[in-house]
Length: 417
Ligand SMILES: Cc1cc2nc3c(=O)[nH]c(=O)nc-3n(C[C@H](O)[C@H](O)[C@H](O)COP(=O)(O)OP(=O)(O)OC[C@H]3O[C@@H](n4cnc5c(N)ncnc54)[C@H](O)[C@@H]3O)c2cc1C
Image 1 (cartoon, rainbow, N blue to C red):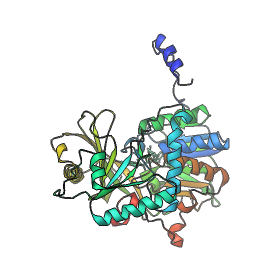
Image 2: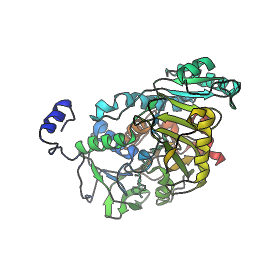
Image 3: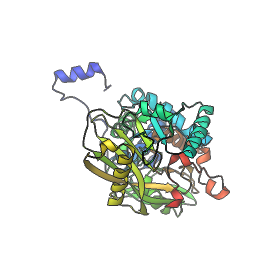
Image 4: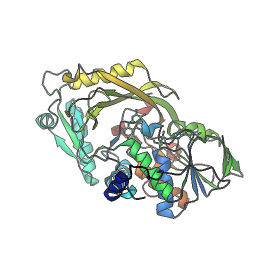
């Protein structure tokens, strides 16, 4: 059933009793053309684009728990394409263009909100770096504006732009088309649209083994039995290294913990995303009024989805250094996700050294914004057994041939952790 105003009114007159399930609850079949391991945004998007763009619909998405409860449901929802390196700029800009029309494409409101992403500069050197990044973005056709301290003050009045601030503001880089999207809606929208095209979404089905014969994948073993397929895509974020190890592949990925924090709700005070320049910290305000914040990794390897107190302190300290007026806010809750950190900060999207095995992983802090492009390009790679031009630079081989994509704009250096 199409989601529309007409159907909303129609269902309202019937007490909302006739809405169909958004996706079917199915038993796994014995054989599929393609299996996708991991029912987060990336896995569901891959299945959707395989069916929509390539006409392959005999697909199952295997999820060990419920869909969307991994990092897709745990992130701070920021989407942007303000990258320095050409490879990243082209990939994330393609993704941002897909975000702009995603609600209509999926017939599901993903609440994409281009409220702008402002990177605040807290030193002259940092402003120089932002000027370089902004120039590179403009050369790649991406919107970028370099702001003076006064313009930053006008744009975000609650920032402490005083010259006597502990970390004085020297300017900023504004990317107006960046912003936020509702993470749960992205999961549900892709799941519903993929299901409509015939994809089986199988929850509570953990993959416990990969079956490989003569160098070619032939299927997987799961907690609900063996399933055959000659093409298998891995989209499990922080568990990438564990699944790859089932085929004796060692990935240059470490799993680390990243937390997010939410304050009590306020009236609207912050209508953009602000990234602090003096530390790795960023904040935005949700439609409910809460401030959502993110910062550094916890600094040790972990598969636990919960964090430690020092990072809560880190977030609170940076929020109050940036805007002292928030110092009396109460922190309501925090949570953690397991990050798949590559050693150059960029993802791996492509073929693995076993025929028929593909991966989209190593997303570090930034995979939510990549969800549409990751799904689109991984689907292309699986369908054609060769990468799309946009994901060709993100191969595993780059760690062998040395052509790494060390993108400083994507966060602190992962190899420091
Ligand atoms: C606190 C936090 C803040 C973040 N903020 C942002 C942000 O603002 N912007 C941004 O772009 N990115 C952000 N990210 C990163 C982003 O959330 C992730 O990169 C992205 O969501 C990864 O999506 P995914 O579909 O690959 O992974 P997930 O959503 O984690 O999905 C992977 C799925 O695989 C399943 N799985 C694992 N092992 C198995 C198995 N053996 N069998 C079957 N299923 C399995 C898991 O249960 C999970 O559901 C943030 C992450 C965190 C944790």
